[in-house]
Length: 138
Image (tube, rainbow, N blue to C red):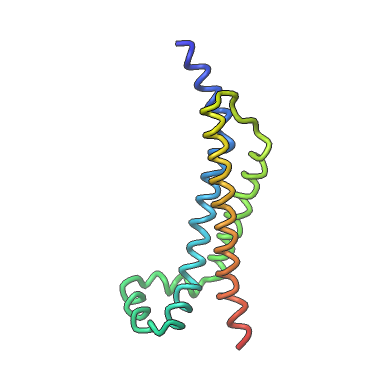
């Protein structure tokens, strides 16, 4: 029964890294909405797959809703990125456990969180270019 407090302490030490991982996953999900709303149609039309895009929009009409509300989609993605960034910032100096196995898990969680966050920022930036910059060049 003495392992229960130690296990609880270890979970508490890993908690900031786990929260930042979930925050980064949430940001990636929100960024993916921006990708689907704005990049997917442009790329499909550019590749000559307009008929496939029409079929996709017939099968999944929610994509039209996302495209019509791209400001909302990008607002949610930006808020998710800000929240994930705050969680990563908070967890950046949190101590990892002294146990080597748990320290490796902590380090791996931080790497994954940072990688997912960077991917989310890149996806949102590329989507913003397709949604706002390229149409303004016409």
